Image 1 (cartoon, rainbow, N blue to C red):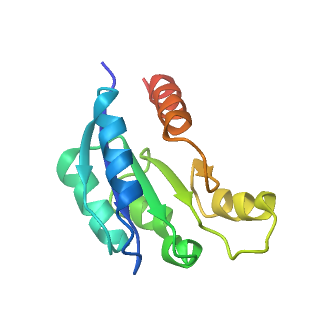
Image 2: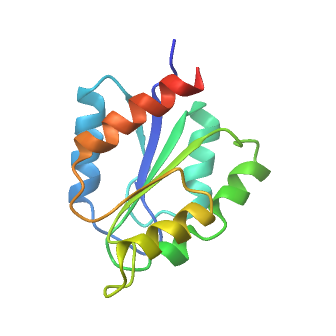
Length: 138
């Protein structure tokens, strides 16, 4: 059986919550158990929630433009806390405006994120990828 526990939240000083609520609802609708740490969340809150719940994935949202800064070192921290196999997804307005998406995506891959979603990506796409990635981990 696939672990369907997913930690979600809005990282850093970002206080946007509408998208977070939509993600939460859609994940539950698709059979996932959601641990929603809410907005204004530091990396360690995502990690602690994943440890406490034995989650299979962390989905980080950011809209305010500083997502890359907020996500630096997250994979290393996950590894340090024993979460080497956890899936790390990130999405939203995670770049600095005028950059091409390929550059942003490469940088997030380099810092250890498994999936990177540009603004406007549907949650259905994320759910499809999540199901695929969790099946592959079995």
